[in-house]
Image 1 (cartoon, rainbow, N blue to C red):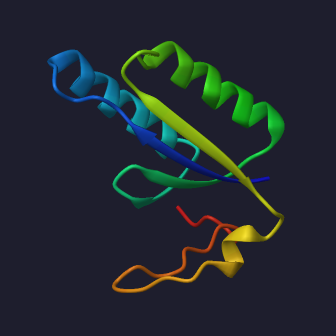
Image 2 (image 1 turned 135 degrees about the vertical axis):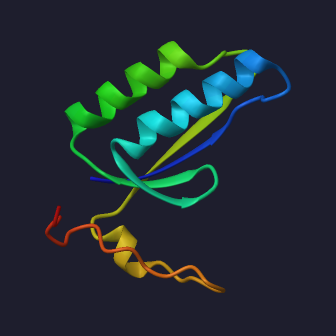
Length: 96
């Protein structure tokens, strides 16, 4: 499934800055950052539940905001970008 995950973590305190770094690190393990706080993620239901569980244990419910949008299949191929942003291939083989 294709997921667009956005987050807004309150960084006015050192604890908030720590939470922001932790949420970003979690998301980096699952998808590709396309903007400062926006990730495109291709995963299955189990992967999504695991990610959301980790994020839930990281954020402060009364200060932070996470949004998860489930896109239609092949949703990332229909993205329109402007400026320097380009399309990111999600289904190409990963070469390490």
